[in-house]
Amino acid sequence: GSKLREELHVDDLDDHHIDEEGHVHLHKGRLFTPDVPLDPKRIKVVSTDFPRTIHSVQGLLIGLFPEGDIEHTHEIDVRHTSILIPDPQPRGSKEQEELEKLLAARPHLQEREEKMKELAIRTTEALQHALADDAHDVSFGIGEEKQKITAETKLKPLPWTQLAEITKCLQVRDLLPPDITKEDQEAISSHAAWKWFENLRHPRLAYLAMNKMVTQIVDNMHRQKSEGATEDDHLLHIYSGHDSTLIGLLCAFRLEQPTAWPEYGSYLKIELIEATDVEAPESVQGDHYVRFSLNGETLRCYWGDKGDEPVEMIRLEDLLKLSSMSHEGLKP
Image (tube, rainbow, N blue to C red):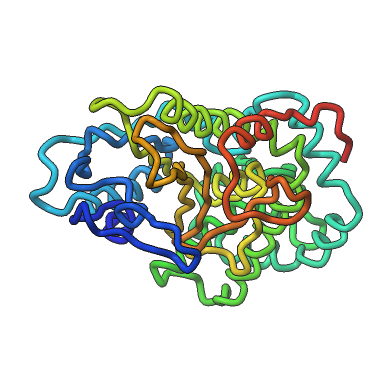
């Protein structure tokens, strides 16, 4: 939260930045200034209804508004879990459910699953003492079928997404069982993320799984551009979700994949930027662009005007048009 506060707020109206190409970034590109201060009323917070995501965004708000900075309780909207994750139960459509099965059945995924099966069984065995009675009844994750009991162990391995979340939570608290090493946890998380990316990179599945959230984000930006911001408008929208939310958005917005999977508590920032001629009258509106970054590092987008060449920013109007493409009829 404190790091995000530094990225959002500047104390001096005259504090600008000039980059190597001579472009002037007013207020260092910050959203909040002394004229438009960082105020809880200008922020909308949405979270899934999982306790850990609610606690996470509560911690972020404390960092944004250190003690003494905030005078009222901030509302956290937890009514939209089904659109913040790509794998709600039940799925949003039968088509999504069937497409996931088709994609998961591709030979290279099946081959990788077979190689990783022993780790899934061994890890599930090591976690048995800590699992609730109904842990095996949970089925979530893109392309994750309910696991079957294996003949070798009489044990039903947990889905990879579930194994990744459980072991990561235990690792950050130094509570991993002795039979699960740090390398095991990294292999589990890496495989789970790889499966998510392999499936959600399919444009039609990305649309089916994430379109409602993507549409909400893009529409918010388009409304700010078209109508301008009043004193009561939310300038900052915060969504608290899961690894699957992050992967879903990376795929839906066609962003380059990070070289290393982000640490616990990572954040994707989506910025609306107005590019104007400083010599032009204030009444002249410039072009609006969207920029993406992960933990402060810019992620390029493959939805630019140069074909397959990634771009660091995309015009808002182009993003509005491209993100609404449904790719209906596209086969696995």
